[in-house]
Amino acid sequence: MPPARSPAAGLRRRKVFLPLVLLLPLILLTLILIFPSRSIPALRDAALRSQQTCDYAAGGWVPDSSAESHLRYDHTCKEIFKGWNCIANGKRNGHALLRWRWKPAGCELLPRLDPLRFLERHRNTNIGFVGDSLNRNMFVSLVCMLRGVNGEVHKWRPAGADRGFTFLRYNLTLAYHRTNLLVRYGSWSASPNGGPLESLGYKQGHRIDVDIADQTWAEAPSFHDILIFNTGHWWWSSSKFDPIQSPMLFFEKGKPIIPPLLPPEGLDLTLKHMITFVNKAMRPNGLKFFSTQSPRHFEGGDWNEGGSCQRDQPLSSEEVKEFFSLDNNGTNIEARLVNQHLMKALEQSTTFRVLNVTHMSEFRADAHPATTGGKKHDDCMHWCLPGPTDAWNDLLAASLAAIQS
Picture 1 (tube, rainbow, N blue to C red):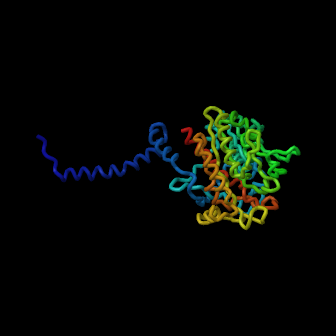
Picture 2: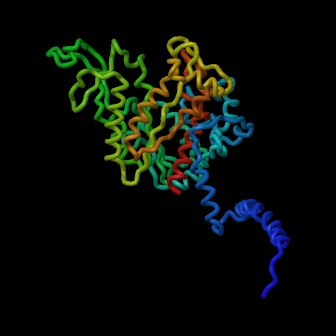
Picture 3: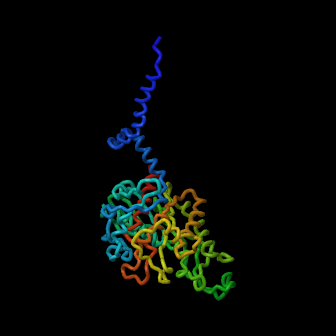
């Protein structure tokens, strides 16, 4: 019969075992660093899953003095629209605005898009940006990143695009399809023979067909493997669609909608029809993203009221609340209003993924072109390139990597 174990012997064993348990995570981390190969795929997959669960939409910008030296392109990229090239135009904080990195709450820094890896990962792929000039801002950022490592490109206009580039070595095409409202619109004048709108006193305006995709992108879903949509700014633009002189008049199935809709209601109906259209027309296994609204940073009034954006630093969290609170009904509430309509529409479509760029951009009052480049009015809506829009593409790349893994 074996001798009984003494309590002291059990305690000694536990004292030896406990440090080993505590050291196990450190040992596993060391293995990951030393052997980042297929020998420990499970550990690497666990780390990747942890990264994928990070909410990149919440967080803040942290100073990073080395960020500017790691730019993936600079002001010499020829695709940058002149008015957005803040460094070339001599914006006083054109370099300083690049020394920030987005850090999601409770997570590591948002990973940078690696241009070479992006090209490799998306061989034989067509990627389309569909929307207004803010989506062009994002498109140009990505083009410049990729051209920084590969200049073998063919410039063309695929599927009705405003502009496009194919990176020949990788057969990767990027295209921008310009559309302000997503749907077809044009001027409308009252008929001498009368009609439903004429009987209500309308004499002129803009006809918006909520169920007909703008021809600039109608073929895009059948051509592209990945689509990134945006819309919003033009729906709240009284300078473009004056509610008295040139109101938005909505049509469905070729007939005016009576009673006439207000622009927010027209946006809801447009989103409903266009989401349905894309879902039916998209290529098999295609990926669809909708970017949330990019914020503006006018202070002292709107663009035509002397408003400006001359800050040299990102806003604080408290300043963001003040700028964009819907309760304040300020100049810059457009973004959050648009997002309410967008999220309502997307809740009914699980096939679209949301690219939430709003909150990260709300801080960056320092990164608009303002009056650089000789503008008559401050541009507090578009973004400097290079600039925060690069982080939108970092977010896109992280989202694609999570989906594909």
